[in-house]
Length: 214
Image (cartoon, rainbow, N blue to C red; front, side):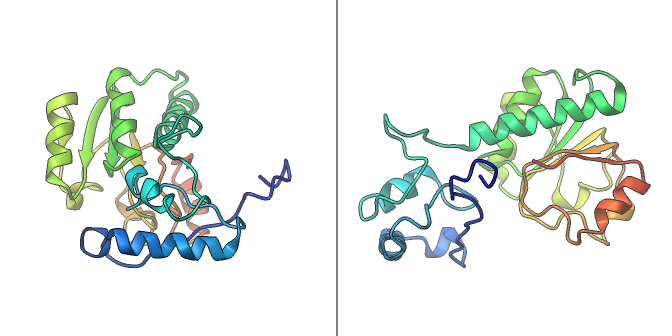
């Protein structure tokens, strides 16, 4: 965004709370009205806890919304993000093992949300050995049924041997507590702010772990 000077970089908004408990039409409409006050200086889009259906509701009161399910919009952008993550995983495999092929590689996907589930599907078709962790049991059942994924608990993420770790949940997963337990050669995922502290990137380098965040 900065390179092409389109003025569309750097914005993010957060509605604090559990979306399963507080998200209502009234809340989304109010958010849309707040968007209108910014007069286009901020554009809302899909992210954690905010889906295309939610954006369609917001769009009823505000035009400042992207990623709508319409003929003139891209719809759910998570498939594009997932494609980028998948290409990062392949590039990581090439850097570590000399080939982008993921056949037989053990890839642990943490987080089966909008992006993570699509990443898992791409890995399945690439013949990777899929390992999945997510707090939602229904999503885990889907991954096991549709893709033959090995299912593990969130507590087992860092004790489960794998070749590539793909974090696609919330941020801060690479921290002083988790780093000593890493048993993989590469990290490539779509989670935001994966490093709890920026200097942890140097620690990954020292441990010969390739870090390729989306």
